[in-house]
Length: 542
Image 1 (cartoon, rainbow, N blue to C red):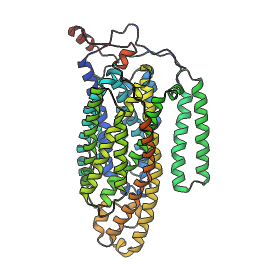
Image 2: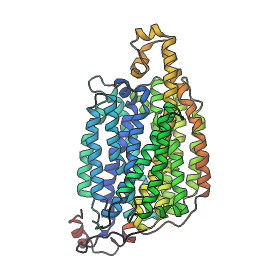
Image 3: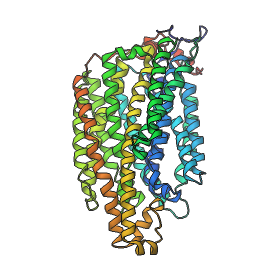
């Protein structure tokens, strides 16, 4: 059921959406997204060194899984709470949480605490992702929203250039170290918080309906048990007692969640969304893409550093072709959607291009040239740019304006569930094969390994591989190549499903009314006296 739409207080002045105000709001969103995207590109290049220093090579997948799981858990909460009470304070809270967690990660002295703080970063990162997309939908009509994909793509492009360079330099620096990959988030986060405080002005809302705490609890239990089930299954075996117990916990949690949501006044994920076929197909498509995409790119910097013998800085730079491809097609598809109002062709083409890149990547080996690897990543980026933002826009356009935040978070939630499952399952496959391959490589070259100071696969860092000498170095390189390359082939069925979903995606007209206007919370600035609008803008709603 749907409760009355929350509205702004009666005594609030009319909220006017002028181009100037939209640009100010968008500047705050860009600052927030820069914090999150910059962190991801910095950490990816530093990952092998971090897990080696903290003794967690065989558990490397947990670093990515912790972040993805935490961000996934809070996405529906940010989406629903934003619909109920407004998104401004939630957005500022997400930035602050992300910044504080960066300090904790920098101060970590063991692998367990590092994973915990990465999880806390996910609590903030999930909010930044959801709220940015929902706020754009609030202030920009779906028909024009494609034009704003360009600046967002520029943010990711900037992060892709700056992140690997900065992260690689800090990781390779003897005087600084990987901890500065997190310390650098602090001034960036503070700057984003200041920009958001002054630039992000949005209407306040008033809601008297009870919070769906039971829905939050049961959904969190279902998500957590599902992720741990896949992780334990890959590590301990699918018939292990703990694995079966987690599978049972997942089934019970899902049943409880459905029962709770049927009775909730303001369900955290309204079940009515799943009676909308366009929303369902777009969300399922995002989940299939997420499963394959994150699994593929999570461990590529590790492969490039270990298997190709490049430094942290160079391995980060080698990821730039993927971001360049994403940048090109994200901007191009956004402009095309604005001009034509059509979108179905983009996800179909994107899935085909990504699948082709995945198939190509199954040929990776220790002696694959860097030019070939860059070409593979560029093709993958071209495909991702055609899909990622389109499925969110389609989901937003298919629902009522009052459910914009919830629809955005639900779409992203299932994509992140797919990503978390993919990283957990295929990350476990990768790390298990890697541990087995490395153990064999070290045993076959035991004397050389001891002389090089390599006593365990868990403490292996790129510098040690480079200093190992032949034939040990080649054996380690082959171990990484032999562990990762087959994983890309295992992901191809997910893209077959994604292609089928893209073909069934219904194309409906894109709305030409912004979410705030459609809900009666704002009016457009056309024809409004500029001095009157400036006076209102001088008194920000918080």
